[in-house]
Image (tube, rainbow, N blue to C red; front, side):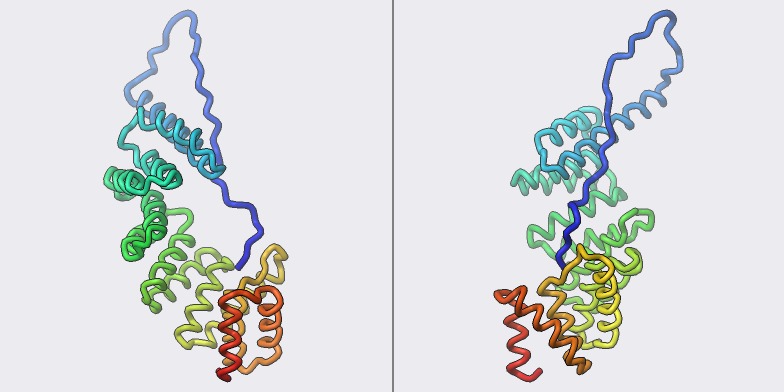
Length: 268
């Protein structure tokens, strides 16, 4: 699936640091608890700013804010996890791994660190380790983006050949995301691989419906070959011909088009 939407950005929280000039008497409300709350607020703001800069590709500014956060709290899981993103983007895989690991050690319940680490491990080709991190993250029922967690978990399981588990994870992703296009496509594809064409057709139909309502979504080679396989199995020749023509015209050099030609030549 090709998405023409803007890249998702973390929202930035403006951080204003300045000296508070006080004249007259000094208040006595600066308790230890108030100071600790102010310190945590500052750390949170530094991390939010840093993640916004990471989203913009401005690693220098991101690192600056994370350094400030880590000065306040060297074991801040949020700052360590975000620093892992910076280090990975800078090509420092070993340091990134250590930073993610330190974030999780500091707070095993900090789910965002596990999500970041899972994505990092996937990129490093450590699929089993990646699966384990996403599996742990999926248990956090309070995490706001659980749909993406289950989608990523499904990807790792699919890569490992665990198709039954991948199907379960993709279904959860569809449920939690209320029909996210990428989850619908992945679920349809895995169901085809399992030979469950009727269920695959139902989810693929939902995908097509979403695409018809959103002109920013266009077929990819993957979505076309998935639809072709479903239509071919269900003897829907019109749909097969339509999708096949799109694949030929739009992606003639793709692996999926070569697969389609093999399907035709073998009569499968």
